Length: 173
Image 1 (cartoon, rainbow, N blue to C red):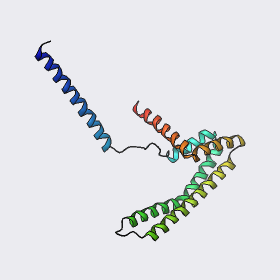
Image 2: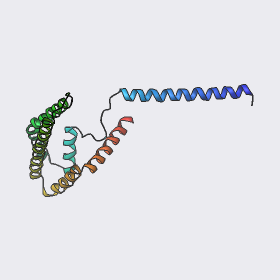
Image 3: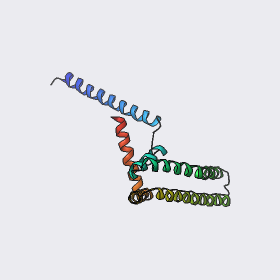
Image 4: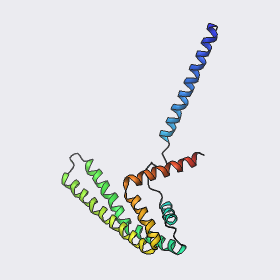
């Protein structure tokens, strides 16, 4: 093989590798600038969660209406608690940003968040108790399985990751 021909091939390969590296860096740069739509363990939207429960429990139209009303009541009842949890988290962040954070205030805020989470959990339990009353005995069996999955953080997170992967696969096709 001729010396010039071999150099042309090497230069061609080098230019190809440079172009591939630039394309890769460009893709990485664009993906880091563009905000991600959903993280791997994010909860589904309230509408999607409603559809999922309706489908898994095979709710009748009448039950769906009752469930919708229960959900609406639940979100109205817990809205203030959720808002106060967010406000308390902001207060903690503000206090931590102070020159000399007040540890007693931080402890008090932390305890308040604990109390609010208890209220929130009690509201959730009450909501599912009411949903349970709407269900038939057969549907209660499915509700029990669904709640076990939801209340087991490791299983719930893996399920959410699988759902997000499937959703993302559908977008790319």
